[in-house]
Amino acid sequence: MTLLFGAIDVGASSGRVIAGMFPEGKLQMFEVHRFGNQPVEKNGRLFWDFETLHREIQKGLRELGSFAEELGLDVTSVGIDTWAVDYGIVRDGELLASPGCYRDPLNRIGTERVHGLESFDRLYEVTGIQYLQINTIYQISKNLLLDYDLLMEATDILMIPDLIGYFLTGEKRTEITNASTTGLLDARSRTWSGELAQKLGLESVMNKFGTLAQPGTIVGTVLPGYGPRLSLTDLVLVASHDTASAVVGVPAAEEDFVFISSGTWSLLGTELKSPILSSDANRANFTNELGADGRVRFLKNLGGLWLLNESLRHFEATGQNSNLQNLLEEAAHIQPGALFNVEDEAFLEPGDMPSRISRQLRNAGKVVPDSPAGFVAVILHSLAKSYAENLTLLESVTGKSFTKLHVIGGGSQNELLNQLTADSTGLTVIAGPVEATAMGNLLIQYRAAENPDLALEDLRQIIINSDVGLKTYSPKER
Image (tube, rainbow, N blue to C red; front, side, top):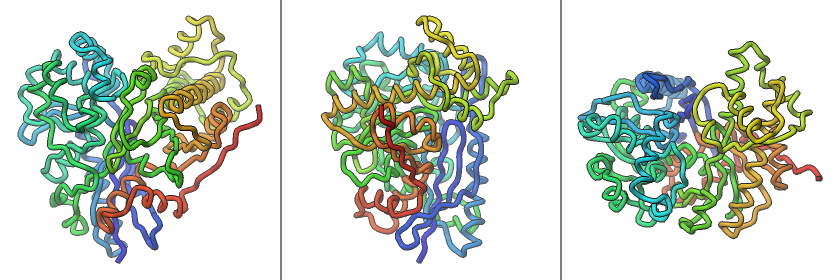
């Protein structure tokens, strides 16, 4: 019998509900609902509009039920993946405030508090998580300073996918791949770090996080109200950090592979059996996040297409050329006079990105682009250079070497960036699948329902066997 699954896949700019089936062992996907998702500004701070997000997910599930009814099928299960590090503060089932956004400029307050109590070197030895101002550990510390009463009033703190799952089922879990991004999980024991809780004065906060659970766990049944086709539908924990689901969806036949999950961020890394907590890994600022089946996603968060998208938004607002396709065609013929550091924290917040890029270049005495196409070219060339430099670091720290680079996610559609990446790294680039995250989400559900003994390699073979639109880019001779 054909089984139907639903992936709730929410990113930091948009979300989708996708139906998936596996006829003859191949994946078929159908988008049933798409919606926007943007942070909102309140009193100088950034928050997520969770009420609207939840309403859109409810609408998407109803559309999923209608899709299932047309096929004469029930929905076997649904799974949720979202971005990481952000969370909701709950008291007895009620969300006490809009969840904070990781791009909130006041996160730096939490950074100062944490590093005033413990060295980053020790934080890395315990958690293996790279320094990023957005990390949950800093956000929680900021909340302690700015929202103390709210935190103390809470009965639960739930990461965003777990918060969504709670409102869908009434059951609370903390899925471990998302928990691993917080900077609060011990990398060796894979439990909440009592040492950091005590050292940072977070004991009263960390005990509000839910019970840790693994991908593949059945949380409960979706609550009534979505139609008969979802009346017995399970919520199955997938690798709920969207990058963790995307890595499940990497179409790699080889054991040692390198990937870039390309979207708002660029996440460059490989998959390991155990964390690397060395000083070299620390200095290179690589992170040890958990993936499905206890694997470690050893990767680095780099600048991504946020730089391009915010620039396009500025061009449109100021009446300049903002047509991406036209700009990419022009940019393909532009060799930038200078490149910039895409990892600069000045690029974290929304706003006039071309001015920030210009400021960095001007301060370094470098040439500043004089047209929208020039900015597109310098962004993409700078990203490709960053990929090449960090690939070299990755190979040095892990002792591995790679010949192919898998680019997955929405950014895999950017042909100019793919070619520049191949040229800069000297590796063959395999671009796709675009929907790697939703695919990884659906694959974990499929395994839970059909054959729990399938290995990750078996799941990836399903992607390879399916028609997912892969494209190859070879490096040009230098």
